[in-house]
Length: 352
Image (tube, rainbow, N blue to C red):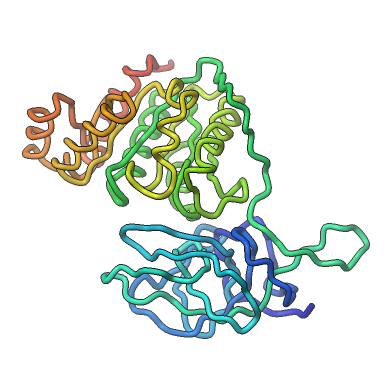
């Protein structure tokens, strides 16, 4: 065990609440969620920021000592990678996302360049035993998952946002709906159900007016998958519904067809039965048409509205209406209209 001074605490490790000086050890469990200290080995001119535990974005530079967490990522428009079979001090890993997920990079996106390389310094230690200097490896999150099959939300309406891919406007639409419902006098809670650890989306939901928020990282999950996504979604739905909001809004990170477990959630009978309003966020008209068909054919679900970049102008709106029979509403230019339409769909009038 030894002491080191860190420069940046990544948001994936925000539960650590560490000071600048931490204790690290050499025996590193090479498992997802284990917090590790690394030293950055190179410079980058793009995709070179890290989301800190505070939520701020900070530029990463060569020589920075960063605390992140081991994890995997399977991103279409980003880096993909896995947890190494073994992790030892001196090994080289890569920073896979802006939240501080660390692993071995398998594939890059040409627009982002090569990822940051980082030399492993040691596993971060925490000391849970009062009066004893026995350090144990620190891990992400820790709240238990509720694996019960029954899902009773007590009548709280639920708005879900699914996208055709990454960057299809899901968070913008979620924030538009949350903000409008808050303006109408309603209490809204929100969560992000799938993806890789990064808190900016739920922070944006809080900025839009969400009272309580949650993300899978709170439960020790760095990156979701088909095996844990349904349990995570049910757990967060139960916990937020217990706070008796007027509505719950949740985002399904990544696309419907992806590796993060969106399909598994949509196939879960308990979750699907509690979705009061489904919004499809599409990047273009073809994606809107295909996404609507996929939701209908594979999951028996029809989106209430389509939003996202496919609705950025009247051309896209006309094509969507003609080819899908669904209404398109742009969340950026007509956010209030989208929120009002969702409120009407889930039966929420305006509070005095």
